[in-house]
Amino acid sequence: MMSGGNVRVQLRVLMVVIGMMMVVVGRVTSQNYEDALTKSILFFEGQRSGRLPPSQRMTWRKDSALNDGTESNVDLVGGYYDAGDNVKFNFPMAFTTTLLAWSVLEFGQFMGSDLQYALDAIRWGTDYFLKATSIPGTVFAIVGDPYGDHSCWQRPEDMDTPRTSYAVTTTNPGSEVSAEMAAALAASSMVFQAYDAQYSLTLLNRAAMVFDFADMYRGSYNDVFGALVCPYYYCDGSGYADELIWAAAWLYKATNNQSYWDYVLKHINSLPQYIKRMDTDGMPVSGGSFAEFGWDSKHAGINILVSKLVIDRQLNPSPFVFNADKFACSILPESPTKSVTYSPGGLLFKPGSCNMQHVTALSFLLLVYSRYSNDAQRGIQCDNFVVPPSRLVQVAQSQVDYILGKNPLGMSYMVGYGNSFPQRIHHRASSLPSVDAYPAHIDCQGGSQYFQTENPNQNLLIGAVVGGPAADDSYVDFRIDVSQSEPITYINAPLVGALAYFKAFPSS
Image 1 (tube, rainbow, N blue to C red):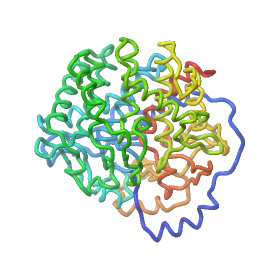
Image 2: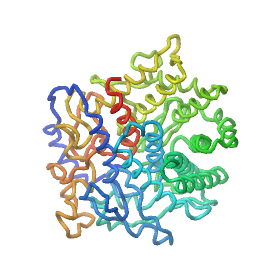
Image 3: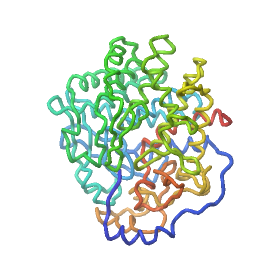
Image 4: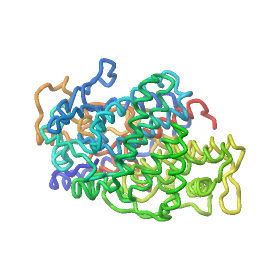
């Protein structure tokens, strides 16, 4: 999540922004999707919290937050830092894990040697979620103090800020975070069926338990945590009903238990047609629910996921296939029902900050739906014309290629990919000297000089995809511009699947 920083410093560094605008250096004509896939998965090792394993490849990162959960008498060591800060927000972390699992389920066959690293990335999340749900009637939702953490610029290995554990319970429920965790566990259980049957069963049983808790004790974690999450730190704007249906759909896919399908059918039509989602800068954004998919809103994901079930089993396609078609049509540049905009260079845009989260998530859905539609030998109905599934692939590939360098600036928005990529990303661990380079403790304010400096970050967070350029394709390579320069786990998670697909089918 974004960090404030010293106002006077911000005013000063703004004076140098103009001189740090990226310049046009030509277009990239081809992409190495295999290299990008490898790096997109490696990024997750840089976001790890806890005791790092001997297999850790991003070696400038070290152990951190080894006492998480101590004050609650529970082991909460592990999991991921969501972005450039040092807080563990379990709501977006669970969404990240769900999408990593979905990426493997759809495209794991194309990952080659990177598949094992993708499995490791998923397991790093699910091992932590098993800890966070180990006490019946309790789901831990946040570890760390968002406000304290965001007032510091400090390595995770050195954290001085409180590591308070915040939980939702039967008396103070939080259905959105609990249900998303259930979805992550259920989706991941399917991934591990072929690799570790006992672990898969453990995940599935826990997913069912957590879903029951989320459904039986309904309520929003906004009401539990108040200003701790709202408006800036993953405040839920769309309600928790979508997460409950999303989790039920994944449980049905994992178990074939009719009760979960009945749950989906019973509640799907109660979802509002128009919703408010919360952007990462705390601003509400309204839109048609069928077109929304991200850490806050699962509506389009539900329709895409369930569309395959109803098509394959020749069930009533309403409203899933209809809304899935509407979603796809809302993305296509030539569609009369397009609800997004495109930059002059061709990048998809939705309102709000950190635009790449939309680019990767929606592109992933387009790819998945193109496969489902192609398998069913059906086109996508966009008002009075039909779009072939291949068109969805073309649009998704244009977005992935833009990220990797086929854009007006000729730069990659993935750190470490290509010859030109962001050097000053908004990320504490990346910008500060590593423990190997500077073993002494760096306190809360001791890292400020590294936030303020115009020098490149000291450590490459390889594979990190940043928030991306502005709507005119310009990019400011500086930490202060959080919306453009901060990497986030749920940007990368769906990109993993897309890159695996284009590695196998580069000329789609």
